[in-house]
Each structure stands twice: as structure tokens, then as C-alpha cells.
Image 1 (cartoon, rainbow, N blue to C red):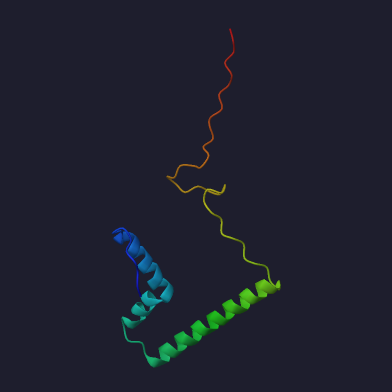
Image 2: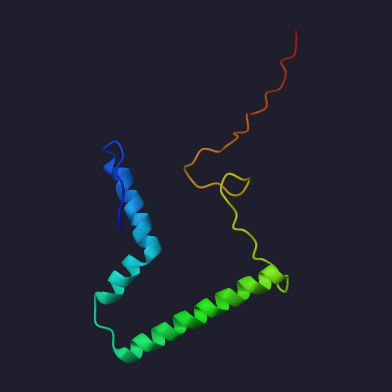
Length: 103
């Protein structure tokens, strides 16, 4: 695996490397290899992963063919939904002032 460092920006290169490692599944494999896994447990885990992959593929195919409805997208903050505490709102509502009466 290779990452280019541009303009001595090591922080960006590290972020790119971590993202590549995450996509490749290296972190998951390191976590699994940390401790011994019995062959029977390994077979059960791999079988469960295969079932999960097959279900996910079948669900995607069914959505594509229109057999089931696509899941609703998760609400995003800032799109009129509930605000996070401590965060300023995107469009603050200015308090309305009553017009001053001329006397």
C-alpha cells in the first residue's frame, strides 16, 4: 500500500492511509488476529458474514427491481431538523420588535 506525501503534509497522508486501510479491512483483520479463534467459531462467524452479505445483496436487488421500498434517508442536522445542543442555528430567528408609536 502506498500513499504520496504532497507539500510535506504528513497529516493528510496519514488520513488517506487510514482510509485506505479501513476500506481494505486491515483494522478488522488486526482485531480478529489479536486473540486465537477456534476453528468452529471461525466457521460460524464466516457463515454468518456470508449470510449477511447474501441478504444485503438480495435486499439491494429487490430495491432496484421495485419489489420493496427503499429505506428512508436519515435526517441531517441543519435541514430544519432538531438542533444539536450548543451549536448555533443555521438561520437564527431575529426577535420581532413592535414598531414605535409616534407621539
